[in-house]
Image 1 (cartoon, rainbow, N blue to C red):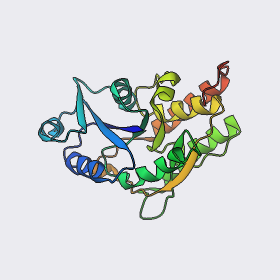
Image 2: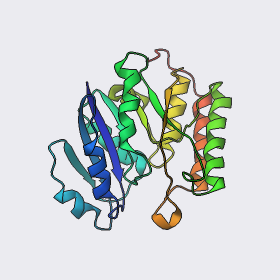
Image 3: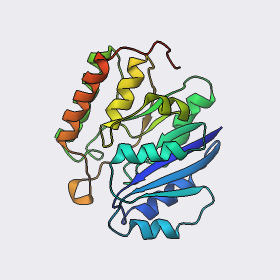
Length: 234
């Protein structure tokens, strides 16, 4: 199996070099490729990516910022692996956890795996950020009669063809809710494994806001009211 690690990047000149180094240093149990999409960065991110040298790395550049969902679509369209996982470049997630997400797939126990964050005082920069995450996840559980633990997690591992079949339209952070809503609508319940996490604050460049949470709930409601596809992918 080949795993495509998809990394959307926007104005991360202070972290992108470390993000690449960490992602490529992991001892993966399968072949990997790292597809980085520079989503119209206006700082030195592009120059740093241009100096990166690894046969497993491919860099794609957007001429202007289009949003996380759009960057992931670009990466998915060019992915060459059978499976994919998203890894943000902000160092909040530890790529050393990716083999843990792969384990249930390689063992034949799961097709879709989510990394479930456990928030603590050292891993969340604000009370309202954690409550927002939990509120969006609860909305999904109520709407779809499910019991997932972390809808907004970046670590969503699944077959590339499954992601392509979802037809994700959200160009920004709403893609997280749209992906989960469409999976749950198909009655696909993600397998969850615990992962480590350290949230950065606004002063460190965190971009998501309360408006993204409102949008996520709206997207979940939209997906719940749509009819389920006649052919269910598993």
